[in-house]
Amino acid sequence: MQASAPPAPPFGFDDSLLAARAAALGVPLATDAWGPRAELPLPPGWADGMAAPLLDLGLIAAEGPDALTFLQSQLTNDVEQMPLDGWRWFGFCNAKGRLQAILCGWRADLAEAPALRLALPLPMVEVLRRRLSMFVLRAKVKLHDRSGERIAFGLAGEAARAWLQRRCGQVPGPQAVAHVGGLTVLGLASVAADPPARAPLERWVLECPVADAPALWHDLREHLAGASGELWRWLDVLSGVPRVLPATWEAFVPQMVNLEVVGGVSFRKGCYPGQEVVARSQYLGKLKRRMALGYVDGPAPPPGADVLASDRVEPCGQVVLAAPAPSGGAHLLFECQTAAVEAGGLAVGGVPIAVGPLPYVLPVLEAPARA
Image (cartoon, rainbow, N blue to C red; front, side, top):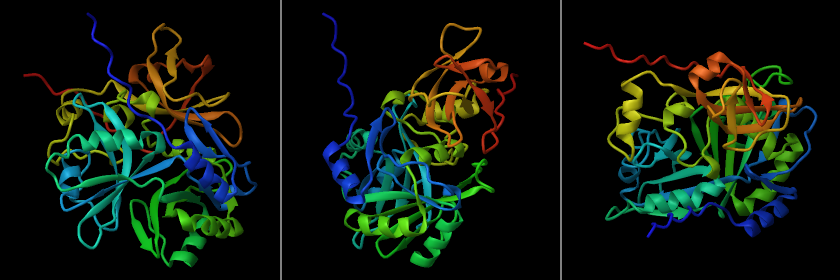
């Protein structure tokens, strides 16, 4: 008798909750293979200052006396050494080192115990919460889905910096966090989005209670151009930071999508699920697969779409993140065999990929010398 396949993870999100949230903000809601998003037209002058509702961003709270030590044993990056005023990228892997989630986390301590907030794509929230809960055992930590309690906005541009300075009295830099009057502001790395931007765009994620979101959105729209979630995703593509979505669940070891390059992996901390595989990929040979940045003169391909080389029948890679570019076509991050990227002639959905430079330098990891 053949064994039945394991049940599919509970990917998804509450449609009614999102519809109510979009209605409260007065923005149209759209959903595709990349998840839910605010659907707004491309505003003129958006590069001077923009704000986009991030309806596809979910939130998990880890609370309790053992919150730090528990997550230290589960995530790829160092939780215990994270500063109170900083945030970091993290990965959560299965025992084979394959990523089940990529998230950003920051401290949000309560009066009685440490606490962390973990932000990740909304369809992945319940999957991660359930998987982490399997390992809690006797640890004094509770994992809660807080996606229905908070909402986030993506801010970019000089006018956004001025708005933050005026509203919050401070503007956090990259990897820094500010907490002001119920608001949480995360500073992101700047993105070279030229054209049409004249200079690299500074970016931030602004998080607030759902009840405060309509008034905050109104204030933002008075000073900044209202932008779609799709435009924000395009900036995320150009930043070179990967995502894991249902279509790419357990598809990548962290180094295959450059997670260690953007600061999402610590090789000095203790063990976590898949740690041996991740460490072996780092130290025992040259990496044969990496994530690259490309452009296609066509629509944005879906997550997990096959990347093909002209001289091969089998796929040599797959799409990690993609979004339409404001000037036409689409940019994409794709994981691929490094030899195939170097050889060129790649395509997705029959459309050629023009490979461009990433916003960071990939380290060269050579195989160890043999005795």
